[in-house]
Image 1 (cartoon, helix red, strand yellow):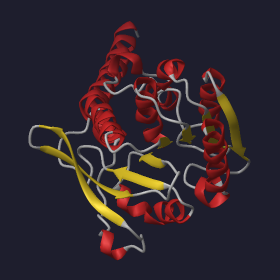
Image 2: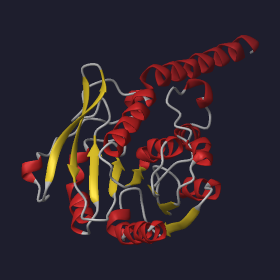
Image 3: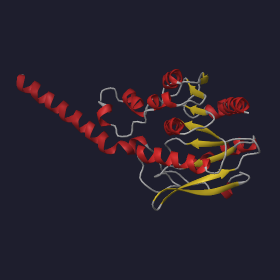
Length: 269
C-alpha cells in the first residue's frame, strides 16, 4: 500500500511539474494572440487618416494610423488589447474622429503591423515611444487603454504627462488574472510579463475613467473596481450590468468616455 501511495504521489508530482514547465515555456503563446488580418486604410471610411511608422529600435518600426484633431481638441492614443491588429477596430477611430478627437493607433512589436518580438519590455517601450512621437508634434494627449492595453496605458501615464486616462476592461495586473485562472499554480514564479498596473497607478496624477462589464469572464469586473479604488484621481467607475469583455463599445462606452474627456478638457482651459 505504501509503495502504491508513493507511486501515485510520483505520478501527480510529475504531472504537476509538467504543467508548470509547459506554461513557463509557452506562456507568451497563451497570453498573446497576435495573428489577425491587416485592414488596409484605403478599405476604411476614415477621413484624413495617414499611415505612420514610428521608430522604436535600430531597424524596428511600429506601424500605425494617425488622424489629426480638430482645433483645440486632443489626440487619443489608443492602446489595443492582446489579439490581432488595431486595424480591425476602424469603426472606433471613425467615431472618435467624427466627434473632433485626433487618434493615434498602432500595433505593438510582434503584432501584424509591427514586426519584432512580443514581451512586456517591448510593449512598454513601444508605448512610451508612441507617446513621445506624438508629444513631439505638440498635440494635447489623452490616453485610452483596452484590456491588455490598460497596462501600458497606465505605465505611460505614470511616466509622462497626459490630460486624462480611460481604462476599458482593465486588470490590476496580468499576473493577478493568471493567478485567478490558475489558482493551483505559483504564477508569481512562472510568469514573465506581469504588467503591474496596481503599482503604476499610484504614480498617475491624471483623472481616470474605468469601465467594466459584470459578465466579463476574461478579466473579472473586480479588477476594474479594485484598480479604480487605487486611483489618485478616479473620476468615474462605469460598471455595465450584463456587459462582457467585448461589448462595452456597443454598450455605450464612447458616449461616457468622450463626455469625460470633454469635461477634463474644459478644466484645463
